[in-house]
Length: 555
Image 1 (cartoon, rainbow, N blue to C red):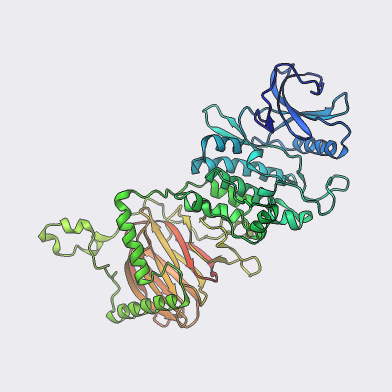
Image 2 (cartoon, rainbow, N blue to C red):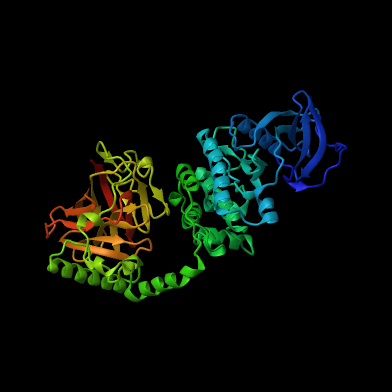
């Protein structure tokens, strides 16, 4: 327990009269007191170790006494660095149950944020990941906490001066599979803290599972990032309504500049539909992943504004809009693709403006260098030695290794054979450990999609790949996209009557070649790679999900 747990009284050196008498423990002072119990700072004399002693202040209350016993038994079976440890438990001579627990000499997260403001995104991610690891361990032992909130996250100093998180107060925890005689709540009884409780804890408390703890952890992450509660209301009814009917709160709206992937994760954890919340493995992986900086230097603001205005004017394909907007985008791309096909060019079309570096070349350099001089240097990655499936075999491991900014928008379909990956918005990225010679797979693009893309990304953030547009079947083209998503170059086109296509991408001699099976135009499409690829990218936009299946890398 923490020195700031419960309501701080500002203890005295003389033990209060109602402190429990415990063999081998000397009570030093009272730390805090609540409605039914109190916490004291104590010392185990034989070990000369500071401890927190928690005991009821009212004797004879059987319900709270049973909860005390249950908390002791649960803690005794949970040995984890991010869960407050229980050293001893028992009954005092006056009949009150007590717990002798690990003493955490630091504040709880809520008080720390109140005193110092919201945490830096990286620190918030690290601390919440630690709590998630503790909760995952508890769930593996069959335990659901049911009251995950900032007040129950205690902070302890590490030797290097940074904080580490400890999950406390398992008084409301229960086994995930109820055992006769161990469930201390009546059927339908609501328990928890309303501001951090999941919607199902209000309307179906008997079916609560670990996903309610994921929701509570999302509230903790939101509070750590913004310094504010994720949900508020002027009344209990208003608070519940915001959880049951309202959207997931976006912490980036309260604190602009937060990393996009961290905001998206928080919103996914706070989904009112528990089936849409990520599991512990996905949460921990996302929180442990390096964050993307969102700051924009002032000298780039005009450039960014220009890109945004241009995107609005031309109806950029990457921005989903009305059906009319999407039709116009498809038609425009179709016309460009037809023009490229008519020209019979397999070389990338330039964007109309040379890179700044070319303006500084002497006149003698106007002659275009040989194609081999334009190709990227050899990759630092080793060549792929054997075929490799890019999606995992098991349903819960299908996207293992992929970077997923929005877990709600991407995931495997459980009820479809082969568990295809469904993507509705944004992108997912898989870092390459070895450079493949080919990538094959199948994509099905829904009619209302804006686009889908299978591509390769280089270390500078440029993406080159196969873009698919649903227009009277599919129109496919090879494109090279800048870091901002804008087109840098395009090459070739092909059409297909259906919206499902089997593709082969070949990487060779600094170029990417695409072939579509059964395409109306069988001629391969070819585009130069601006640099050696380091990752595979899947991208999709639309009201319905694009399906990616059988994605494989081959030597």
